[in-house]
Image (cartoon, rainbow, N blue to C red; front, side, top):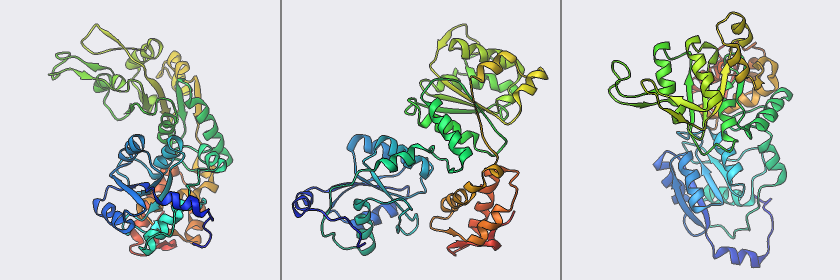
Length: 391
């Protein structure tokens, strides 16, 4: 840690009078208490959060300068959480710790002096000599965060284009349709649009049009009043109404029954919802994102999808590439999955070489499954090798 930035004795002495606010974020209460014990309270004003949402709420209420983050969050992916913090609290620095040992895991980006000193404190268990004035995130670091999307990885040219157009449309209320084969990450793009939009503080509601029987889908979408049909013993608010002020994600929109498409079109054009069994219309403010892995134009030609709904949904479309078209993103994707399933584990070059030789018909979802199996087979070892890769 000899690379720490020098600072003036006056600034240091003034800083000693203040305790740096630190939030320890982990669903594991034992880990939280151990990290707090190891840091002590001489230099740090410590508080706890058991989830990503809890941590964000504490930052809103109490502020903070440093987060000690257990990546095994129960509600948010680590990259998604990091992007939210960077967007809303750019002054806050994050140190990721091993979910089992509490050992700090510094990433490849240049950590702040404040973060490095916290790591020193955890590693040696001693008192810090002094604390510098926090170094705020540099413009380059902000640009790096803003060039990507929450929860998504991709430095390839094709993914950078996806990130760019997604960020542009996220600022608007425009209806978006996301196109791509199964496993390419359409749901992640939908979530990212919501998370970087002005609606991010409001609900993100998902409904899979292919997973719900036709007889129930209308009730799920639009809701119903008591007595609307046999078994409707009480009124029910539909998913559209539940997304008030936020975003409704219609996954597998190409599988929506033709009988429901006219009612969806009416909602998109008028912004009103009529529950089953009621004549009352409720105005709602909901942004709609749809996704499909089928060719909607072909469905229109087959008269299985309304042409007017097709044009209403296709105001802005985002096409996602196959994993085989962005193989340069495979190593960081694989490592990200490995860290999720087995924090602290690494991937050998030989294992990555095997992964890059596969054609990946199942795209990123298939890669995730392969790495999850490998993270089990690796056992207590700290590196995934070719013998752990089963494709």
